[in-house]
Image (cartoon, rainbow, N blue to C red; front, side, top):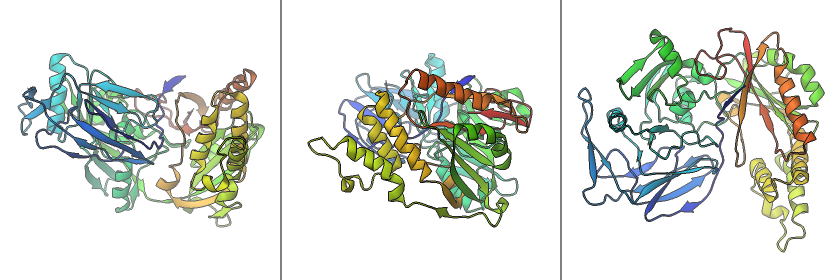
Amino acid sequence: CVVVIMILSRALIGIRRTTRKRAVRALASQASVESTTSRIRKAHGTSLLVGAAAFVTAVTILSPRGNQKTRLEAPAKAETEESVVKKSEDEETTLLNWSGTHTVNTKHYWEPETVEELEAVVLECHSKGQSVRPIGSALSPNGLSFHSEGMVSLVHLDKILEVDTKNMTVTTQSGARVSQVIDALNTHGLTLPNLASIAEQQMGGFTQVGAHGTGAKIAPVDHYVTKLRIITPSLGDMVLTEDQGVFFQLAKVGLGCMGVVAEVTMKCVPAHNLVERTFVLTRREAREQIQQLLVNHKHIRFMWIPYQDVVVVVANDPDADVAEHVPRNLMHFSEPERLEPFRNLYIELTKDNPEPVTLESLKGMGFGELRDALLGMDPLDVDHVKKVNEAEAEFWRRSQGYQTKPSHQLLQFDCGGQQWVKEVALPTGTLHENNGNDIMFMEKLLQGIEDQQIPAHSPIEQRWSAPSSSLMSPVHGTDPNGLHSW
């Protein structure tokens, strides 16, 4: 089994001010930054940090101090102005990841605005023997990209460089957000071949960590990369394609260890609508039906609920492939009725408080917010967690039904909550001959949780994918019919 990082999100709302320390939330949207002295951003002054829902905008005031400067010489081949890195020994940058689970302090943090400036940073660090790690939107709940010795953010390198409708590819700078790319492609009737659960990743991180959606015939997103522009420490600015063979296949999921990816080109597919069906099975039914479900649906994911005999199934298929008699939009319960199990539990658990929660005070809180608030009351008490999981099981029973929307809207969903994530990828036979590793893994995991009375929150999500051609992908494989479970 291979442990990888799953990119998930959490909405965090807060304002933080610092005077001698600059606090920065890694950005899921392009920063609005004022600077008159340097194109390579370095830790100075104060920041206003505001996080809200899926977008964050940071306003940074840079205040250079004295003559403490280090001049970085751009490589001879790069036609650019000289870049200046501001240094301050008593000030540092603090970054907080999206899920609010990790922070890092560093005195070496850059935000170049051009590829030439990026190359200057990489070469300067290489010449000094200083490590530097590329950071995207910091959506990893495990702080994958954080590194106190040095980080470089490509948040300002966010251009959509080309949409090639003839060859159905898109080329972007690595700092472009997936949502930006989707919007640009929509105007050409195109979209990306697969998405993870959210679209606020930067394209560099999206591909470099091997992000994946779900679908037995669909590979992780890195598989669809056709070209990379990468800034390396010793070889400088390189363009890699399949012609470079092994090096290209290694670099597609490189986690930044082979250099900093500056530009990404990847395949596209025609834009399309998906029909989504959500339904609930028992664990036994899930085991019996998994083979048929994987073959019959383009996208499918399971959500297992500890201590409940409930497996939530979400299946998505192109509208054109779904039979006419299948409903396109059908829900049996209204939104308030679906949320009722959470709301009732919240009211019950706070009835003896000096200021008990009321139904009126819970209005405006969605599924993820209610679940997170309930778990937050006593997240390590197994009996409490069981009650919350029971409420979630009922929520999903009331959420069964159909909806039809553009693919990029349905393949994104509310992950919800502050999270520490450990994701396992394992081979499970082939599309037409599943060897049962996927369900066996889940059954053993749930048995261990329930036998040992572990306060495991819901859900445990399970997805599937085809193999990836990227050599460092957890699901690398050469059999086109290979099947992997995440």
